[in-house]
Image (cartoon, rainbow over all chains, first blue to last red; front, side, top):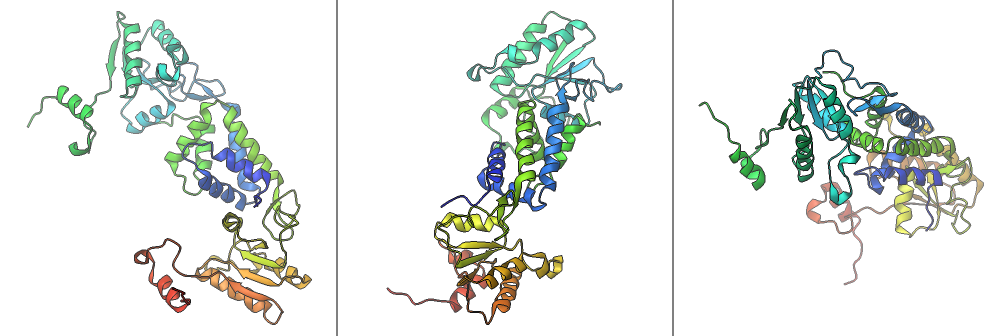
Length: 203
Length: 203
């Protein structure tokens, strides 16, 4: 049995399977879909990818995604407060918080969390840039929105220790039962944390 | 709320959502994954897409995917018999049949099926090329592997009528209960067809 596909198509399929959650069958389906329009769809996608490769950089202030080395859309928005800085792991986290429409401060994107097992140390994250921002002054509150994981906690702890003694309020996102979450499906850690951190209830 | 993403990233996400089965969230995840390696991964994918757009053509004999206008890998393989031609709708169908390793003939890829509701007529398919191949002579059997759908049946019927009177054996893929298929889950059309087309059984 010989492969009935041209090398170029095989190359495209194997490149697509590198993407997360895309197996061989899905990659094939995507490749054939792109080929349906002959060269038009592949070329259009190639163009936006080239543009992303060429133009997308990281915000020199907060390390979020940005374009052509400029400040990101949030850091350059005049209405956003730079007094409250929300520390997150990834640009996806920024999107998630923005979606709430409830946060008017700025962000700092670390680019991950400290993870000794995977060889990620503090020097691999955008921590120097964060501490430099704080030294510049003007930051009143630091919200540590690192993930509620061992690595996220370690990173949050590391940051909290570094800024200790400076006149900055350091907070961490609340943990507990998620909204709409059925107690039955919550894990024991979440429940025990929710019990410890129980709040007064006005009936 | 302003979008926290650079325009180039938004453009990439919206281009990815055009792909089948890829919603906004998946497109975001794919885009961020591509961006993780900065410009490397986007550029590599852009390159294979450019190559596909530039090089992939259709086989001048069977209309399967091919490279740079040449005969496809199957039509140019000396061991494949051009006496048996298997008519399919798409290059994916070729892959599916090749995977069985049981077919040694050649293919003819129609590029779809006759579908008046979607405005696809016989002239939109690679039918002229098929009839030209038959007129050239040398085809002994035509296997109509069109889908087991109304459109597939219509197209198969159309082809069978056109070649009627010529000394060619015309066959259609067998239908029935799929291998490993539980009768309980088969639809009534499949079952009634399987009953009509029941075969002798040697116990």
